[in-house]
Amino acid sequence: MSTIGYESWAVDLADVGAVYPFQGWEVAMTIIGVAFWLGWHRIQFVREGKHLEEARQMGERDKIEKMLERY
Amino acid sequence: MDGNLNALTTVFTEFYYWVTVVFMFLIHVGFCMYEVGASRARNHMHTLMKNIMIIPLVTVTFFFFGWWIYWAFPNFWIFGGSLDLESGAANLPWSENMGTNLGDRITGVFWAAFLLFSWTAASIVSGSVIERIRSSALWVHAVLIGSVFWIIDAAWGWHYAGWMVQKLGYHDAYASGVIHAIAGGYALGVLMVLGPRIGKFAKDGTPRDIPPHNPWLLTIGIFLIYTGFWGFYAACNVPAISPEAIGGQITGTTWTATNIYLAPTSLSAITFNFLMSLSGGLMAAYVVSKGDAFWTFSGGLAGIITASAGNDLYHPIQAMIIGAVGVVIVYKLHYWVERRFKLDDAVGAVAVHGYAGFVGLVISGFVLWGVPSSPFEGYATINPLGQFLGAVIMFFVLGFLPGFVVSKLQAKAGVLRIPEEVELQGLDYAEHHAYEDAKAQIIDADRAALAAKS
Image (cartoon, rainbow over all chains, first blue to last red; front, side, top):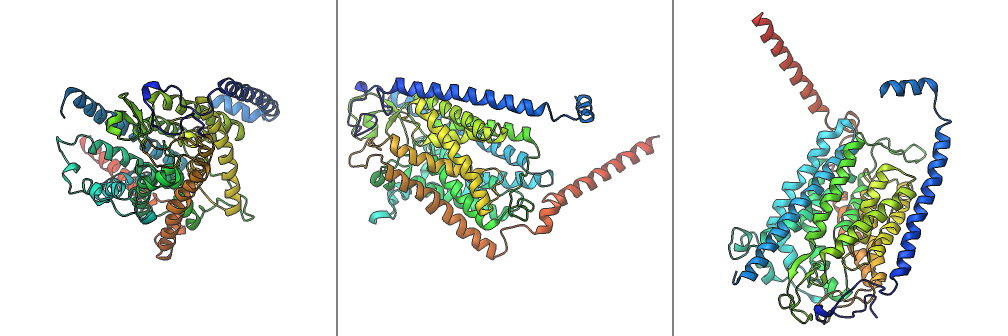
């Protein structure tokens, strides 16, 4: 058993194509990859919204004025 | 060089490795910037000098004996193997191959490619121990990790005839273990003896963050490490070779790029996987660290390192997921070890390199289960147990153990750690005062010259 379909390199490389593991599962891997990507956006949107909501309560007027002057 | 094709291949290969060496220099530039950015202003020059002097010390020792170890040690002394003195002879410092030689245009660039890996291994250790180790102690460690222990592991597990490849089916195409796990393990061994910086832990044992002095320098540093890592990846390949030159089981006449084990891969494959594992690492680190900038950047590196063992063969999505999974484990492990063992790793090197390398080897054993580790007959295929044992050998046997033992000896001799007074006033204290004195003197001299003219 070999996850790439070759158990030895006793082959003519002219006859060899893909050699990554789990060939045939490309669509499933893509679905997992896309879910990871979309999940990342979801987590980030939620977290940033929460962070900004907390941040808007934090500012003190004199410190904000100093920050504005600091540029 | 008989024949145009042979000449072209030789000169191409020579140029190829030369370019990788230039790229890899950026890794060291990046490490220096990262260390200086992470250190406090009162320690800048010593931090920089400590890392810079790794370059000459590891270079000369790698010329004197490190390169010989690689060629003589592949089967020494495991399973009754002996030193390969014949292969070693051509790589001794007094060999004709180790100099200007029109009959050998490859040894110099191949030696240099390995040497730059040596600098990296030593530099990884250097970052974790900043602001309290004596430079003299670190430089001994640099020589040991850079010109002895990593190159022994390379002979065993990163050589087409290494015993780990033959017996364990060990596979580590882009050095998850042979560079990163060993260097992280070595750093851990040193840190266990060296102890934390003053102020790192509160009285109740709670760790305090010691923020970087210059976050922008640190950011550019890590981006340069990424850039140099491209060269590192390319340097791990043989760019173009025929089945006949390989001399293994591959049939036909189709030339290929290979990994260090002379098994086929392509530059295209590793380009896919480098970028996808970098991305998986960055995305996972951003989430797990809740957007912490430096953990996110380091997570990109840890993502690549986790996937590196199998990045010659993985599918890009596999590389992305493996990079992401590795980063989550590494992040959690870093903080658990910090709290549990009161470990002060100033740049997170044990985690980003050591744990990521270890985890990457273990994962690759499952994902590449049954894959031929070599084009030669009789070698074990890649398997989870072989990869786990390989990870243990890299991290603990050749990394942690020597780092710990040598540090213990240095501590006993009183030459490991700087005095507490110096740690508080800063390693650059004397230089700062010399600078201020010199400045005051030259200003006075200029004023006197101006007064004399009026």
